[in-house]
Length: 179
Image (cartoon, rainbow, N blue to C red; front, side, top):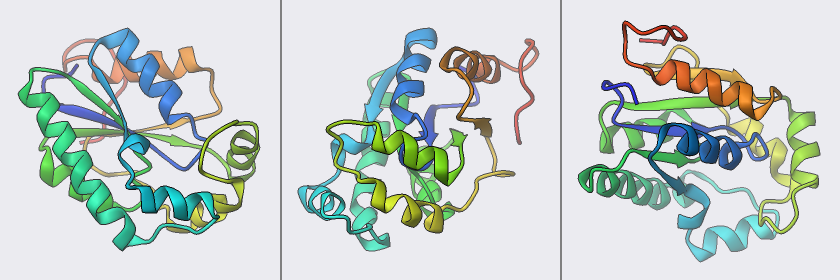
């Protein structure tokens, strides 16, 4: 991983492929995958399962907990890759406050594609009825420090190669990074 990056967050709306791409990044570059959904409190899962969108208050403690998980992984000498929607700038800033040098990979896709993917995803607590609320909350991270935006409709291998190139230390061939 690029020495300027202490950890990585794979972010975007439900159905963008955070878990799939996060797993592929960890497989290719090493590190530890932290599934953000695994840290939602039971009340958040209950609300989402019932088709109720989370608000800033619902997400606040969850984001702090994710920051603590990132810190613990770094302290253990691991290279964490977190999957987290991180829809708003203030959510990303909460994570950045916990972990300086945090990079973000934004998996961008259309509302129609997100809905199609969520409808095809069995056994997840996030219903397709909440897709519109995700896009309503989304504040694009384009232009933010240490952020790479990718077209989430591209093949997993292509996306993983793009992330891998971006993560290479400066001076090596790779994608330009937003600084």
